[in-house]
Length: 475
Image (cartoon, rainbow, N blue to C red):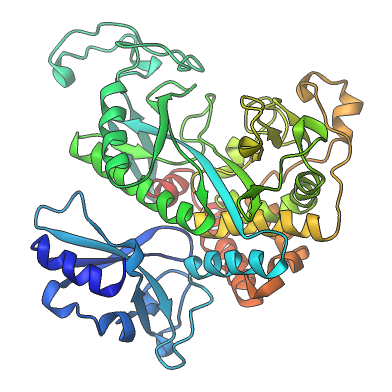
């Protein structure tokens, strides 16, 4: 839509408020709300002022004034506001220069798409993330100098096999709890969340997310997955934010809580965000070819770039200390920087479900849903493009279960980082590929490393584990 279309929609839908949303530096969506009569066509030219010093990782207090410029193409009726409210995503600008703010994650995604076109390699980057999440009936946490704890619960949790559930659910315990690693994927009534997921998907489709499927995931205690059909990089980053917004609010309205932490439960599967990606030009998928697994040379070089820069990319795709509790050997969260068709123990998998040229893509399996999607999708693409530009071949594929290889062979396979601190160091040492086209900037890289080190790595080192739960539960 154009500005005039938005104003027409406000009038026709009897909108009373306009809610402007944007993504902060670490990756949590923020918003503020205007009365509809304050929202005019001039708003799309002049922007709306706010305090940038109160947003994490942004301005200092002496440079606090910032502008948010609404993007008319993102306007939609908010599905959760009782009073008719228009929701619209904004881009962040400097109020003096009117230039787009480099620390605005959405700006980075916009620049990434422009850079792809400027290279001549392709004109579209298609992204398809698979976000996993938990649905809990309770999430309690506290951390203080003299006390620390967290507690999560779910009627599906195997730990409730002997619980008296009359008080909580008005019925006796009926069994059918999901054992650890037993959630993929039993039918109802063991899967208690079928109707909830269907309600979520119905709303998502209504608001343009184009959902392909939903199901229970491997872990006990309400782990789920809802898969969106692929879209272009910026659009998919916007959709990922909306995806979380819808899930969290529908769960909340049912007295439940959605959790996107990578590893909320010790000893069971964590939640990933396997990210599928392909590059297209003039309507043609450049990843389709006659090489290994039906891939083109371009696709192999793209994979080579990701594998080369993976440890640095993890600083954006796996951006929390909790991320590295999921990235452990032996699970579907690979720590081995190799590629393979069908093989889920490799960091990069080439899906083989569909042999159509349009379906050819690679899947980067390391990312998790605490990632800021604007940073993460841009970083993955930039690493891949560097591989194409420098013809970085990924070597031979590893078409075996890496965890079954002899120790000396497995040891030779390059590994992902084992901690957030390690990935931040890798980013510090290897980020030139991100600076091409001014997509990321030195300021963004330095600020990201400094923020993560100070507010997460150092903070959690000095506090007990529940502090980590507090930091990341609502990401």
